[in-house]
Length: 116
Image 1 (tube, rainbow, N blue to C red):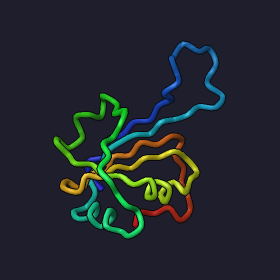
Image 2: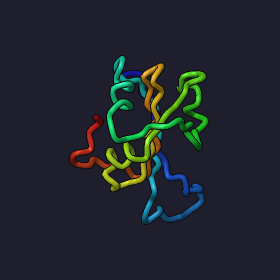
Image 3: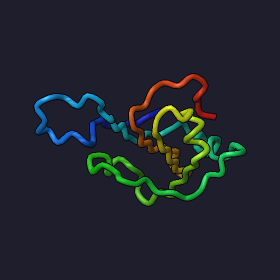
Image 4: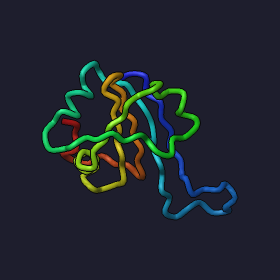
């Protein structure tokens, strides 16, 4: 992986509370470039049915790091494979540039959730 750019924050924190949120929902979102051919290998795996799908709610701070005119694909089945349904997560891939864009809420390491 190269050229990673990411940020994490509580999207519900207005900064005006006196006490910290007792149950924060930390959004971790970012983009990175995978080794050449990695994205094509991921999206060609049987059973995931990747379809065109552009990233939504892109934080302005990350917009400059996404490849221009990228054609993104994603798969709900692949998302479930990676998150193991333990946290919310959406993963978009740009095959022409080998970029991955991820958007997660309270991500955690999940046994058996490695990319295939």
